[in-house]
Image (cartoon, rainbow, N blue to C red; front, side, top):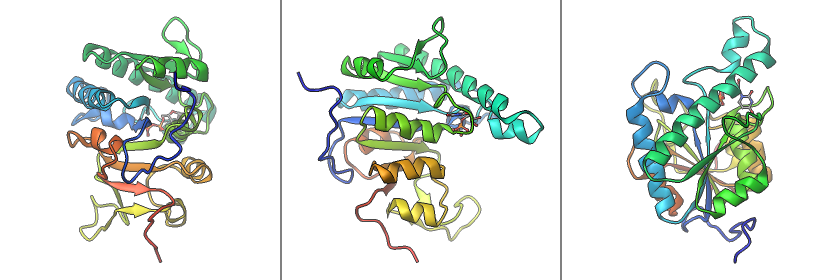
Length: 257
Ligand code: UDP
């Protein structure tokens, strides 16, 4: 039996299928056209997209944010204690994780929720061993409640868990088809990058993931693919080695001036 904790060290993000992926979905992804909350049609769509990833034999970890329900920064901006607001944000990620878990199981995809904040009557408390156990059994592992600590984001949680489970690739699935030099929704002349280095992202303060997540990725050379998850098939293509958006890694980055 192969070592479940082994990584696919010769993974080339630009060409080969990965062995283990970490998918990061923003909470806002679940809203669809709604202004907040969870859209059942989007849940079904995502479950089917994730099913395709597992169907090609890729072990799948997943982190979902909570921007569709509550973000700690918004709470603290309106006067709340930041740590309390962040705890609320982390709890909101558990709501999203349970919704995704339910959708996955309904679509025939075995899944488990592991929470960084212990709530054993609702889902399993996070442990790395349990994550490996479920991944080896072909279950999607949804990492809920972020890192379990305030002052972090679910981007950083996704990168942290990706490193812990030795994922080959982090897929940042968004509603934009890659990373641009400026916001493409507000600038017609925005240019999309094919490849970027971690240093490019940090120096240019490109809005991909927060700097803590990018720093972790850079220190551990974990590639990140950023793509539009609302294009059907993109998740499967990304884990299969096809480039479907912007690839961030230390090979082939564009030289930015
Ligand atoms: N959060 C936190 N610690 C973590 C991860 C998340 O405190 O390790 C809180 C924080 O308040 C954050 C909220 O959970 O605003 C939701 O996460 P995030 O903003 O990353 O969600 P997304 O933008 O991906 O929907």
